[in-house]
Length: 386
Image (cartoon, rainbow, N blue to C red; front, side, top):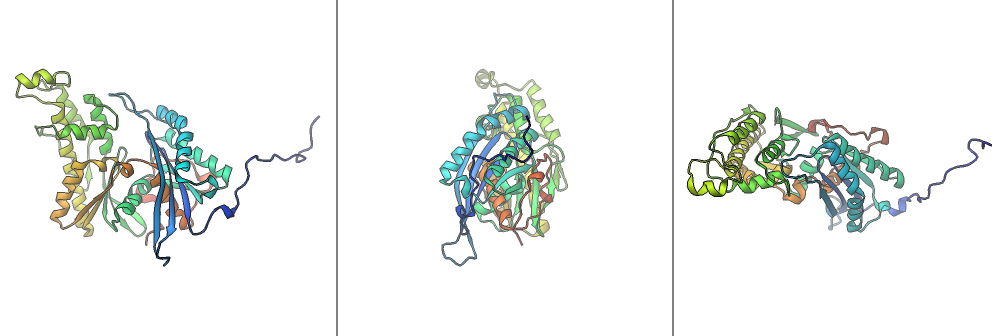
């Protein structure tokens, strides 16, 4: 026996939040990041300034929780395995972020998620979680560009840099950027692989650990290097090429003078004309970073900028910051950078960009929340800047 259509209506067991839960003087946003091997959730608050003038906003980081998918030495992270990690950890990371923030889901004014660029399957995990929370709690969504959100806007907020040239260096991007007319304009970029990808791949070649990150371990070993080996210098005007350089530094591991980690203890005592893994790390860093400093200086000269903001995971590298600082000081400029808690992928940066867009009336309808692996930095309308 069938029942007439519409005679019964399904009732959700979850109570719909009322607007009274959300106060107008304090805006809250949950950010979800999962574009690569870092899964992060964070809650940020925008509050009126203490002066009560209404002209400034106080930004408060309420929580910033992250979990990293780490593979064994010599292995990279595949999209399918990375997505599996995100699915296994997302509920725990999300609960911890909300608990540490001391808020309820009903208090949130919006949920921001990484729309792209990034690895497709991991991106889908974050988008799915954001859509689910939005439907359950009736909270607007804001899709965020990973380049603009986690790096540029949070970097500007933390360092108080007003309008710098931005060097964006990460596992998936290498770009020199300047702001103009509500767009972040790309002045130069990599023509093949990103600097972070270059470092990661080389770390696998020489057998460095992936914990805490390949780039960090290369930085530590480079400090022990004593020999600067010749490598291709691939600047192409405002752009750089890193693939040939990577092939060249990998070729040194086949040189008869090269000594692996296992051969180093004995070789160091009896031989002088040798090439060590530390020498290769040192040479790779010095050459690639010099290329990045050069194209950044060209962008500064072009727009007349004095300051540089280094963002992205590779931006944590102290040697890169030092080399950039030497160049900037010669131009009477300054270098701004953040530490690993903010320059490495995390949810709070997504939340910051999402809340800035939300305050300008920008939201993302459910039907537009699909992710894209290729989402250009200069495709974003930066409505929150003049």
